[in-house]
Structures are given as structure tokens and as C-alpha cells.
Image (cartoon, rainbow, N blue to C red; front, side, top):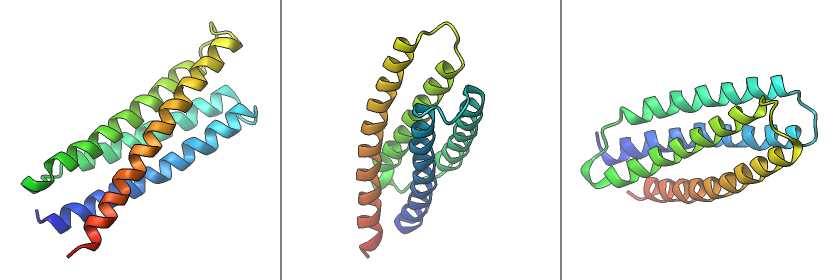
Length: 135
């Protein structure tokens, strides 16, 4: 695989992931405002989790050129972190043994994780766009 082919596939994976990140922001906002029932939220988290798995599986198969291996790993790590965050949110959304205070702490924790993930994601996306535009 050439460097350009690798960057093209990386850009696609990041674009697909950005769509999911926007969905997470929307779901979280609606969840916080009480516009979604716990069952609806759980269903949406499951859809996102499955899509992340699909993106990860496709991207993991890529055999990057030797000078892009670390970049490939960074994107895989972002996808893993994203999936872990979604799984974490999905796990607590239907738990009835948690009181409102614990739920708020967990929401705050995942919000912080989301901020870090978003920052890392934007950095990687910018790097791919920069590298892709170079000839």
C-alpha cells in the first residue's frame, strides 16, 4: 500500500468517526435534557458502538507503509478510546442501582473523556489533511 492510499483510507476512517462523534454530542445533549428515555439512549449507544467496531475492523486490516505505522496505531488507539467511552456510557445508562448523584458523576467523567478524545481526534484529522495535501 502506498502512503497516499493509506492516507486516503485514514481520512475515510476519521470522517466516518467524526459523524459518530457528532451523534454522541447530540445524544448526550438530549439525554441531559431528558428528551430521550433510557431505553432510547441505550439503543442509540449500541448503534454507535457497533459502527465504531465496524470502522475499527476495517481500519485494523490496513497494512500501512513502514513510515506510517505509528500514525496507524494512533488512529486505532483513538477508535479504541472512543469505543470504551461509548461502552462505559451504555453500561451505566440502564443501571437502576445508581442514584442521580452517581449518574451525574459518571456523565461528568465521560464528558471529560469526550473532550480529550475530541481534541486528539481533531489533531489527527488535521495531520491527515496536511499529509494528504502534500505531494
